[in-house]
Length: 264
Image (cartoon, rainbow, N blue to C red; front, top):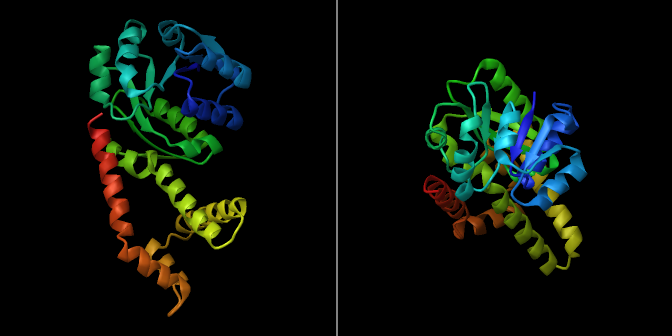
């Protein structure tokens, strides 16, 4: 199968890298186009993919097409490729805020479409992707898409009405986590620790904590309680976080992200 990418930014190249690393596709079967010629040339140099400098020609030659452009440009791209999209073409959209219905309306017809939302840890093979296929996508096509998305992390199928929540909790959340790591490291630097060591230790603590949630199956609150010894250092820190509205701030941030996604 031929897999095309319209847009060759960080997320698209992360997906391409994952597919090649896991053997889901070979470089000759991957097609790529981008309005910036330099991005196409970078992808050719790094992955050896087949380049296109015309979205319509790429779409005519691909079985699966990733829409990997910014939301403000996707309408123009859809109108451009609409004439060559057939009943066999499967479109995979990673465009935030654009529904299945909206995309089909822009194309002027019902098409096989999978809406999904990966996140930037895909760049290191630890992505978290939610996907939602429409009713025209066959079981085999869905399996193929899951295999592609699973090449760079985990995949979960969700109802489309949850996609905005996915943006808040997964798509955008790496930024919140990076801020948390940076803040912890800054505090360690204040306490005298070298900055590189502070970043490494803070990042590893977050990685290990996330792994405990995923692998033990325990409630995060239970895991937190395991660290909080009576009268100890951890519960003192937790008390300060509660006083400063840590949880409420995170919830408000995710809510704001979800609302923004709904209005894109």
